[in-house]
Length: 316
Image 1: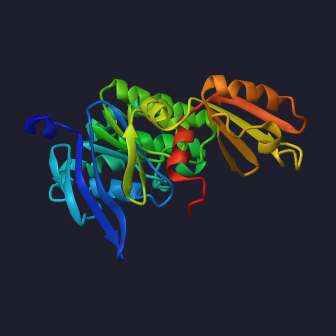
Image 2 (image 1 turned 120 degrees about the vertical axis):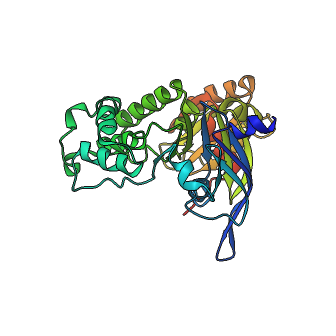
Image 3 (image 1 turned 90 degrees about the horizontal axis):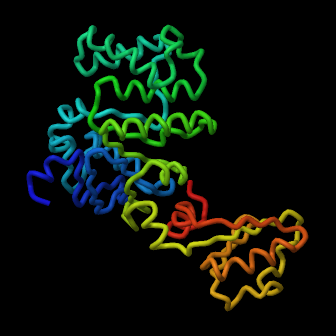
């Protein structure tokens, strides 16, 4: 890619590093976002995702590396770059003293937008977020899903070219989550570029064109969701759950799993059998007939990849 093409990218990051109190949080990360795509930044808690977003927005200063956001060098020209960026933070920070519309108006003024320009955008923003009937509602009267949708609408008040979304659907019920997915897809169709962090692998698989998985601040893999699944995991999975205490005891020995081309993992009372379809299918049928066990036979997904690459241990 030539220099002019690189400068036209919504975001380019090269060899980014950041440490706090002697601990490396972001370790030599490099990535670039193409216009009109959704780029997913995935990783367990403490992997450096939120710090990476702060660095890209100029809210923290890197120890080393190059960041170019909306054609502007970061952090030197961060304020100019942020004029073309929308941000959905991890936690809602709406002003409880204002109505829904007033939150949008006040936020628009931060970008130097004229009152008439903000007012002209409000109907579309409220319709887009499913809040057309809540224009004059106080924030305290909104549900969690409504607040999250308003935070998304607020991020669009300046008609940004790129939108940063830090775990945008955490804490939402399935209906609210799916509505936000639909709205994010609409943004992509309008040519907006999205940078998404999420712990919901289904969300990443549905929305993201390309992904980067990080752990302990370093990139461990990247590519499209389908490419990651094909590269890192067997195509079929059988989950075997212990519905009757003790039913899983001796499963491997009793069912003859060893030596049949299956990769076997156990976590939290569930055994996971990974393998090719022709290998997995006979064992799935055999295990389904064992009393006290519940089996689910499915295609491998992004969550299987994430667990394999980052481990099953709990992260705090």
